[in-house]
Amino acid sequence: MKFFIKNYGCQMNLYDSSRMTDVLCMSGYELVQDICDAEIAIFNTCSIREKANEKLFSDLGRAKSRKFAAHQDGKKFLIIVTGCVAQAHAQELQRRASYVDIILGPQDIHGIADCIHNITADGNVDESTFNNNCITVQTNLNANNKFAHLPDNFFRRGVSEFLTIQEGCNNFCSYCCVPHTRGREYSRDVEDVLAEARRLTAMGVKEIVLLGQNVNSYAGQGPDAKIWNLARLLYTIAELNGLVRMRYTTSNPKDVTAELAKVHREVPILAPSVHLPAQSGSDRILARMNRRYSVDDYYRCVDVLMENRPDMVLTSDFIVGFPGETDDDFEKTMRFVEKIKFANAYSFKYSPRANTAAAKMDDQIPESVKSERLKALQRVLLEHQKQFNKNSVGKTVQVLFVKEGNHKNQSVGRSEYSQAVSVCDNSIGVGDLCNVKIVKTVSHSVIGMVV
Ligand code: SAH
Ligand code: SF4
Ligand code: F3S
View 1 (cartoon, rainbow, N blue to C red):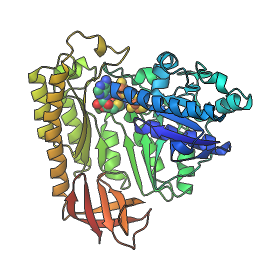
View 2 (cartoon, rainbow, N blue to C red):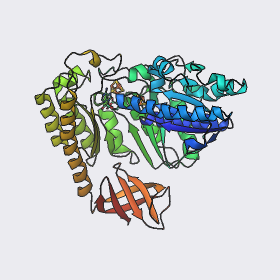
View 3 (cartoon, rainbow, N blue to C red):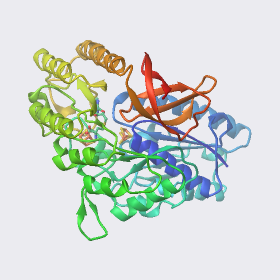
View 4 (spheres, rainbow, N blue to C red):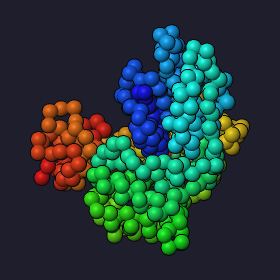
């Protein structure tokens, strides 16, 4: 059977989508790029903000029509919802979308082929099961170690790949649903991570991006029975043959250590760019968010990273309109971003999430104020991003080419500073690592020539 998979949300979901693809391809299913060609539609969902939820339900509405049409023709069409909405809102899904066949939380994705097989092999899927009230629901948060069950084989891999080393989160930032969708923090064993990294490099992967919701609090059991931190893991992965670049994301400012910063100085293949979400520039709001660092702590992180890699590039995330955020708090965020000048930063309007502490706070901010603040912040962040790109003109960076561009002879890659760089040069191929001089900037990326 042919399957289509749509991904919402963060890189951890992208990793899960590629692992589900591995499981399914190994069981004889075929991946298709267009839902029109599929007999199985998988929606790997995100629940971080309400918008992501709404998008899912509109996509599901369209999938329902597709399923209905298929059933009219006597054909099968399975709808599967996986990921964070599946985990946190399984009951709502069953109620609002009873035509969904399978619901799997992020810790249950390894069983996807078995679930499909159970339905299809029994001949269960016929007209009578159009509204089946979800035949299979598995949301065993914390109960499974999916990594122990995922296959060793990979279906297909590119030049740059994600590797999840840690899942879940214990931080309970007051706005965030992740501890409810991914469960408590769990670090994979060092040997398990290394084995996967070796398999990736053996397939020709040149860049590995280590993933975790709070990746710099990694604490995995080592082969020496000791607990390894992220710094130690990075030193070891750096030794792998064929690997030319490493990155890690997402870091929490409260867990940035001098030891981790030192790895940036000592390991040349560790990219000098760190995504370090600040969320706010006001200590009062950071405390209400339960972030457990202050603005000064954040500046200290920047200092220790810069001391070790003076060319370090920082990117960040911000939330505006958090409950109780005053004009003065927001001004502090504006002053904070002016001071640091992030190379790139994502910003969002606060979105209340079920079962979180902030959703119950009584000083919620009106939508119109959130929109105004977001607009003002994004204007400045974009200015800084443009300035960063402009400042890079004339500089030589190292670009790892990951794909072909839309134009003739064009290749697209990323610099060590996580900048998107495109080059028109027929001597360049995907997978090449080249020194590139940046010649000009275009919207969100830059154009260069190989030197
Ligand atoms: N683990 C990462 C964040 C993962 S979520 C960290 O601790 O930084 C990615 C981003 O989504 C967050 O950095 C935050 O800016 C945003 N976000 C999370 N919950 C949100 C909410 N309820 N409303 C708006 N933005 C939110
Ligand atoms: Fe969410 Fe905070 Fe954990 Fe990040 S650190 S995943 S924002 S609870
Ligand atoms: Fe979204 Fe889940 Fe990632 S809520 S941001 S897909 S951890």
